Length: 209
Image (cartoon, rainbow, N blue to C red; front, side, top):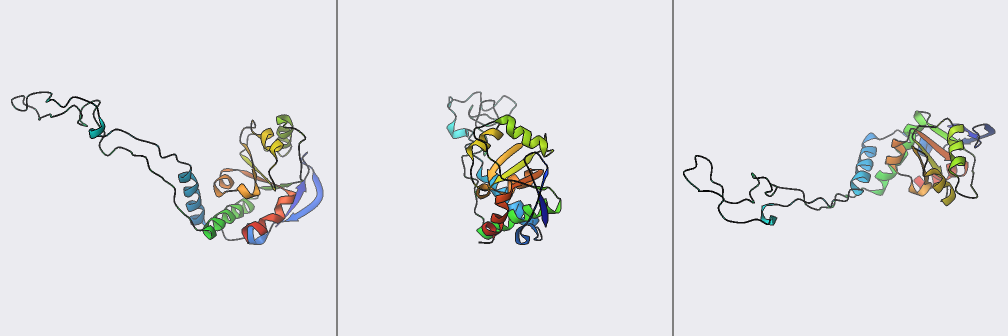
């Protein structure tokens, strides 16, 4: 699949790049995407939720009423879950939600997500660029020239660039990641995938190593 390389003004440079078929041309696996996204979201859960059960409530243990003769059920303690302020039955406890996935399956999931973007023609290739200092206005200008204003977009850099990253932080629905930090969740969440020209040839090396 060949794509035109655009300038930061959104114009064609006259150059073309070929996306690796081994990554962008595979048959997508929906189940692999599901598992990888599920793991990503699970690993981000803190798991610090906790509620007090009956044994952990601080309250008097005296009988709160007569056990017989009231016409109602017996009640032995204010700690009972049936009373306001009592313990919770089978309440949440701190736990770890993370789970393991094989590396090959995670690679398949990311390649499948990229293949979907290629099938939907949602990939833009842009020439390499850099900022001398963090400038939100400059990054906003690039987003606007690519007609991505208001759309959820993901810009993939070959290497980390602090100035570009800091310039993008205040742009709504725009996110910047490096090729090494690319994950299935971010790819599927973005409506458009913007690749810098130098990162395209690295996809084949990264996912087929």
